[in-house]
Structures are given as C-alpha cells and as structure tokens.
Amino acid sequence: MLHLRETVTEHYSVLVLPSQRRQAVLHRLTTVGEVGFAELAEEFSVSEMTIRRDVETLEGEGLARRVRGGAISVTSRSYEPPFGVRATTAAQAKAAIGTAAARLVNDGDTIIIDVGTTTLELARALHGRQGITVVTAALPVAVELGNEPGIRVVVTGGQVRQGELSLTGGMAEDAFTTMNCDVAFIGVAGVCLAPGLTEYNPDDARVKRAAIGAARRTIVLADVSKLGRIAFATVAPLSAVDALVTDAPAGHAVVREIAAGGTDIISAPLPLPLSLPVSLERDPA
Image (cartoon, rainbow, N blue to C red):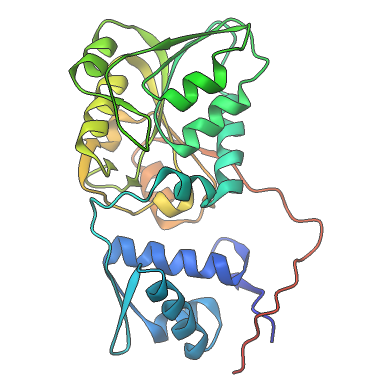
C-alpha cells in the first residue's frame, strides 16, 4: 500500500507523505522527548514497522535514538539547526505564512521584521510595496529589501552571528529602544501556552524581546512544527502576542489554547495539490 494516506482527526484531514510523517515524529520528539511506536502507528494509520523505519531514518540523521518500544530525542532545547537546513524545512508552509503576513502590512507602515527563515519569506512577499519602513536585525532581510524603491530599510547594527547573519548585542537591543513602530513580525523556535515564545539562542531572544517592546502590535509567524515546542531561551509570554500567523489547522490543540487566551489566529493554508504525488515507498504490512 502506498504511504500516501489521509489521516482524519476531530477537525481536519491532511495527506501525509513519508517525509511529512517523519517531520511530525521529529516534532513530537523535540516537544516531549519520547515517542512510542504503537501510538504513532495508530495515529498515522501505518504499521509499526513503517514507524520503526521512520525512526531508523531519523536515527541515521542523528536526530533520534531508538529505545525499547519507541525512540527518544537526542536534540537539546538549545540546539539550533543551521539556517540553510531550516530554510528548506517546511518551505511551502513558510512561504504561505509570509504571504499571509504581508497582507497585514499597510502602505505607510513602519514594521519590524525579525530574524528567521519564516520572516524572510515575509520580506520576499513585500516586493513592490510602497511607503513602508522596515526595521530589522537580520542581514538577509536587509539584502532582500535593500533595493526596493518603495521600501526604506533600517538596520539596527550590532554583532553579526555567523551562519545566522543576525545582529545581536547591546547595540541591536538599544536601537529598538529609540524606535516607535507599528507592528513587529517575530519568528521563534517554539510557541507554547507556557512559557510562551521561546528561542534557541539567548542573544537572539534578547533582541526579539526588544523588538516586541518597540512596536504597538506583535505578530508571530510560526509553522505547525513550532507549536507546542519549547526551546532554550524565553522571549516573551503569549500575553505579548496580538496575532499568530500559522499553517496549522484550527483544530490543532495548541492553536485552540492560544485562541482561547485571546490571541488572534490568522490562517495560512497550503495550496491544495493539483494531483496526488506518487510515492515509491510501500508499506509491506
């Protein structure tokens, strides 16, 4: 049987490919630290052997370790995957989130675009806009929009983090204390009811906190893999967030919790495929 299945939950259905299933398993591992083969097999309507193969793949990539009856995470909450790896993970979802977030920007706004692969998609979606001022501590965002005639780009300054090309330190944090912006678009490693917004690196977390303090509204951009995840450094409680832009369905448990707390949820659904892709991976069970 092809590993292209329809998993139906209380509120939605989604086509699950093997790569998507492995990402879901990895997300569970990152969030709770341990998963069982039997429960995952039931959730995804596949055999335990299929789940075991998924875990073997993750183990081969150094992301999981098999134990009796399941697997445990080998990734600490402070481990930050390289920027290039994150940019290719959930790429379609991030593009959809960036496009949805761009619709929230009005001509004439002064906005903050945070560091991250999802916020970079927002910057890409702003090409051609007029009269916008973008403040950023992300050099990729500055490069993306620096030649746009209708957009003024302000870079905070600070120390450059190699690999991330984010600007950190007192200079970056202090820059935000002198600014009064309309909206801060923030990217994070994790969104959870408690402790709220979290990030891998404390230096980036401090800059994000300063950016939130410099804006009248805060909008978080996060794909479904970030929901329920807790990373090393706390950025801010959910009470600081006005809206969340995500590809997660409305029935997602974390989305329901966040909405119940008063945060607006802005949906960024993925476009439906024109035809179902064919997978050569087969379930022998």
